[in-house]
Each structure stands twice: as structure tokens, then as C-alpha cells.
Image 1 (cartoon, one colour):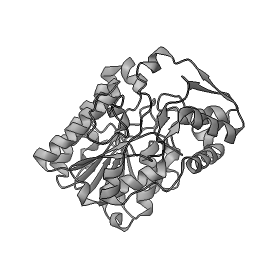
Image 2: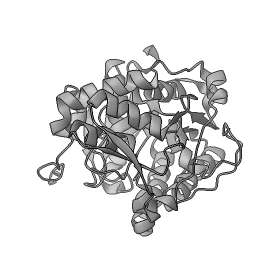
Image 3: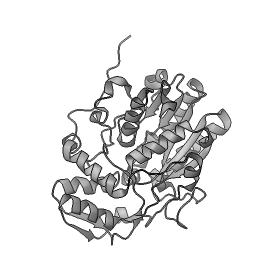
Image 4: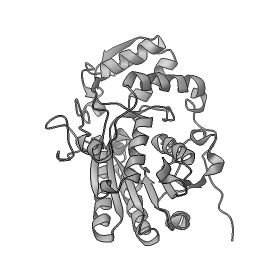
Length: 340
């Protein structure tokens, strides 16, 4: 995308799943890219995610709320893709104060610094379909009430409101994209706390039977990561998106059972339905289908990959590179601070 050539671009959470796929595209587009990632060990940061482009970016390992560490890198950025977040729904219920610090307090400090150091920046924030909770009607549009079922979803709503308020009061040029069930290469594969589809793939590649909670009839509109990145880049390049909230979804519903069957057939394993664990059932919204009409009309975006095409590409990626994702890294990613 020519828009990004030569522009100063910051990506928070850029060692993670969506962030690293975005960084790779920005580098190819000729942007001057800075990546900030806290590299929390229970999240998805992985140096292998930036293999081949690592030397072409400025990488800062720090929490975005640690202003002593990150402020110098916030000066005069033109586009900021704010993907930094802790994304475990179960984890947020087990430790809500850790989720509060990572997802709200750090974000508020970060936005305050952006307001001072890059006041003209266009900021794209990635929200989540979890902000809606159990749908009152479907497909869910952006006017649907937000009633999250877990602490993480509440915090996503809160941070979106931080961005909106700073846009209104401080002229930060903000856009929010509420993404739904993004999947694909470079997702963390160590545990099932960040979505079930990656865990299906991990289990299938290990030759294990897949377990579907409930009867599997609940629907999701899975979105392949390259299509999500297309949307994020378009939002950053489209002035009409400023000050607005958009859903980004495939709009093609696939049941959990259908997803499990597809993964199982591609990998040659079995699958079955099992009872919901109590902690999962309490935050299960049922079928969720989002409308992306508003975003399509603003940008002309549409997904380029079907669910099965994305699944085939994802299985191929982990079949070749799974050893970089299926085992904990030896030692935490870190960046030495230079002494004055």
C-alpha cells in the first residue's frame, strides 16, 4: 500500500499474532516501523514472528505504560496501531487486577504520552467482538449495546472509551476496529486461553482428538489474519474512518463443530463434543455474527480468503514452523538498557 511508504509508524504488541503480521506488511510497504511489545510470557510475543524483518524495525521490549522506557519512541509518530493487550478471557476472571493494569492503566498512561509527543498521530485501536457479550439481535452492528461477559471485555470497552475521549478532547485521530475470531499463522500455541481454533490446530498436528465444548452449534465468523491486516491498514490510510468504531468480520458464519470437523479432516484426527467446563460456560455468548457493512462502505474492504483457505494456510505454516510455537521459549525476551 503506497500510503505507508516512508511514513513513521508505531505498532504496539508488534511481536504478537496480529501485530507481527501487520509489521511484516508495513515493512514490505516501505514504512519506518517501530515495535513496542512487553513480551509478557503468558501472551503471544515471539521473536520468530518477525524473522526476516527484525533488522528492518526498531524493537523496544517494554510495557507501553512504562513511559521512562517508551517515551522517546513516541515522538512524532504519524500512524499508531495500538494492538497491545492481554487477551485471555478466563485469565481476566481469575486475576482481574492484572488485567486492569495491563489493559487499562498502561493504556491510559500511553495515551497521555501520545497526546503530548505525537499530537497529530492517527491511532488505530483494535477492540473485540467480546465487547458485545450475548447478542440481542444478529448480525450485530456497531449500535448494539456493549454488555461484556468477562473482565477482559469490560476493559476492552473501557480502553476504547479512553481513545474516544482523547479524540474528542485532544484531537487524537482515533479509529476503533472490533475484530472477531481472527486466526492464522503466528498465533501463540502454548495454551487455549486465547481462542479455541489455534488450540484445535495444535492438538490436531499432535495427532490428538479435538474436544468441542457443548453441542458445537454456536457460530462464529472467523477471519483470516491477512484479511484482518488488510482492514487495519485501510483504517490507518482512510481519513473517513477517524472518530468512528467499526466491526471487522468475515460475515460468513461457521459453527464450532464445522470448524472442528474441518481441522480434523485436514489433519486426519477425530473430534467429539464434551460438556462445557463451568468457567467456560459462564462466559460463553452463544452464536455471534457481526455486520461489517459500515466498514465495507467506508473503505471498500472485503475478505480475500475463505475459512477453508485460511485454515489450509494456517495448518501448513504450523506444520513447517510449529517447533517455534509449541514449546516455551528458553528465557524471556529482553532488551538491555544502555547505561548513561
